[in-house]
Length: 303
Image (cartoon, rainbow, N blue to C red; front, top):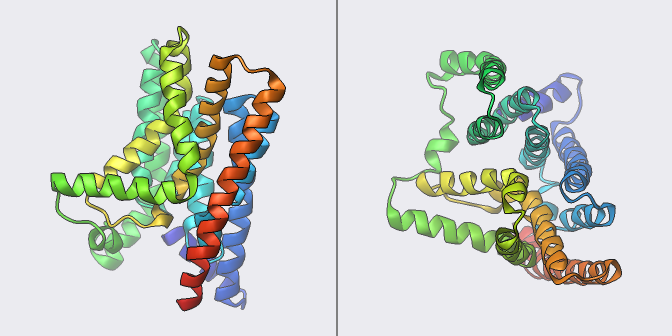
């Protein structure tokens, strides 16, 4: 994570305690990511109350509470991931590619997100002249952001591949793929089981709708979630919770998206939909507090 290392060392250059600098950056980025979740949720759901609840659920996610004060790269990775996806969702692919390049300096697996963004660029239009122009510009700016670090890395270390990527990956096996996928689902369901189930049911409801061809455009961010899961699975990565935290905002937002699809299908009045939303929020917050108080705090104290 060279970008975070640079930010921390910049603080040390100003004679600040690197420990405090890292913690401060972490909490600031975590706070900004909550705001970004609200913005993304409002753009996708077009409902201010649902957007507020999405931000609330994310702010109380037990994994976010676990990692957002550690001084590691998790919070800035979440923030940049939401920003990159948000720009791509609005078809601002060049800006999304720039943010994705910065994100790759935090998490190398962001290269997969860059590929997803380019795929969305090609799928979302029938006029390929501007698409290729955008693609070339996107590749140029992405490579431009990464090139200085890659040159330095090769000269200094003799490789451009992070050691942690090699250390935490294994050989490909079909059993390893299933184990990684199951473990990823388990980690996410520890805190966001209800949004995950709502997401699945919502997709089924949307698929049954005559407007499915229109609504499937809304699901672009979920492609990134799927690609990251399978990327980890194919590389047999030892998945831990902080690796998956950048997808939690999308699980929450699209869980509420699924809830909206369900309430629309059942033709519930607006006040009933809000009551169901509040009930789901309370249950999810309760689940997260049980996990956080019962499992995470004792583990952190022991550590």
